[in-house]
Length: 390
Image (cartoon, rainbow, N blue to C red; front, side, top):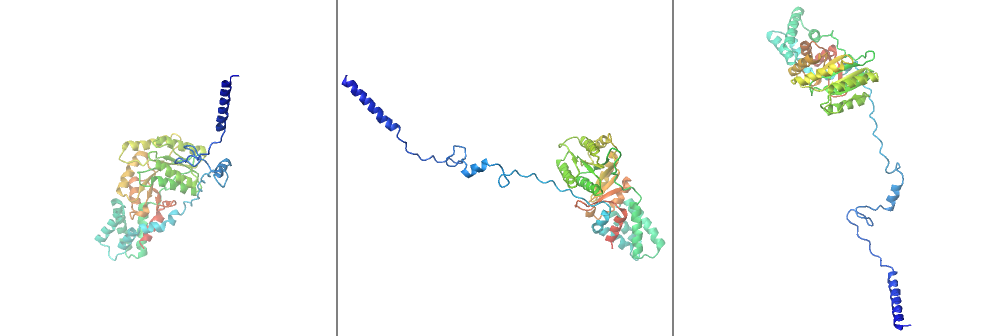
């Protein structure tokens, strides 16, 4: 054998043995790389390694202690409003305070020792200042002058009775002031609420629903003021408080279609009354007023409209009367709701608006509370005015 070849073989084997030893030799442990920003030690880029306790927590099912599914918010508690009977009497003190100047001025003038021409003019001015209106103020003064001459002597009690009788005669005690909410066979009564924005129209709609629910009626509300999403939201809040469903559509939808669906919903639910809140039309915009007439016509394809209530702000005076005339031409107003009556001494607006329109005041708002809307009672109103003057 060639010793040279043998030596080469031995050398190659030795190299292989030595190289294998190096290959199977354990590597030195290297320190783990420092975590990048946003990851924990031992995590891959862009990930976060959970601690053992956290991993175990994730594997466990959700329980009440940790990670429980949040409960749905509780439905608002349905309120039971007070009945409408006697509401104005309960609010009489508030009305008396607001009309104090009106009542006190008249009683003190009529109780003067001497009623000359100047005194009668002052009485007339007091009435006009209270928004009674020129024609009504003149009629009241003429009637009072005649009665004072016939009576002769005037005790405080006699003066009060004279004034009470005359104011009641001007306001009227024989008009139908009922809000017609009795359902017909197979269909609910329908009440439309109209008026200019800012008079408290949507709030009045919600408060009227409370009045009816307090009297044991079931109500459906129609949010036909589709130009203001806030109006529909506000109406849903009022309805939710007393359990009255609200029919609404997206902002900008056809108001007449909302009114139509509200009446359909009322009929399907067997509701007693549907109250439709309409947009606060500017009385100077003829197109918008025409659309309000369309709402009424569309409702009447299903059932007659029982009442159209015009909401007026008692503090607006003559401007409110101008609004009333335009609305009356479009939708045949059947009743007035006078709001913010507690915020003005101009209670005489009741006499003037009824005289101008031939339409009775049916409801009055005497504050911002949810139950401050009351059926109008002429005797309670006049007594409150004269109570404020005592």
